[in-house]
Image (cartoon, rainbow, N blue to C red; front, top):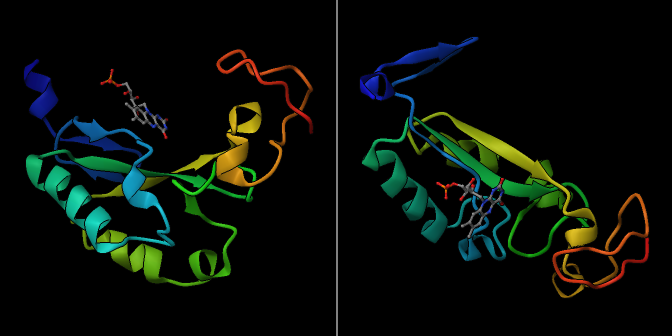
Length: 132
Ligand SMILES: Cc1cc2nc3c(=O)[nH]c(=O)nc-3n(C[C@H](O)[C@H](O)[C@H](O)COP(=O)(O)O)c2cc1C
């Protein structure tokens, strides 16, 4: 238990303690090409709460990846601009970015199309069959 508060170095990454915030799909990410003010506020509160590392994201690489509640790295403004990196450096703790492709679990409404998956096996979580 006590070690949770001890610093740790993972390869070249030094963390002040062992608490990390995992990736969460946040409605706050809607329309966010990078950090919008509400998302910044949300992450800043977590950083000030003491987590040593924040995994931001998820982030989809294609428009079939996950939908509007994710960072959309395939958008020119998101992938080419240095703003996402500048924005996250303001949080004051190291961040990671979760790359995500929902595959057959992608919601056709959110991605405005049919999911892209490696097979036609239906998604067990929602029972809808998938075309790919
Ligand atoms: C609303 C919500 C959204 C989540 N979104 C993601 C996600 O996008 N990527 C991911 O890897 N995990 C996601 N998770 C899982 C969490 O990151 C975490 O691993 C999970 O809640 C287990 O931690 P816990 O046992 O402390 O709740 C999500 C969880 C919740 C509750």
